[in-house]
Length: 75
Image (cartoon, rainbow, N blue to C red):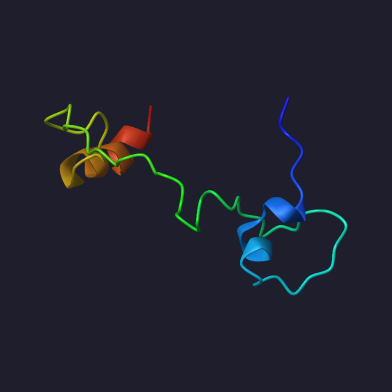
């Protein structure tokens, strides 16, 4: 279960930077221990390219011409 937080635990309230008078913590709540340090983010790692060529490609001009030629349409 998460601990209950209050405005008294907020960095902005503790440093007299809060201008709000609310009964509960607002959306800008930051724990006073964090001192506005952003949370750590995951490192972005590029994966190695697995395939030397594409798994699927468009037909070549010759293949398209053969597919759409009048001789291939009459069957």
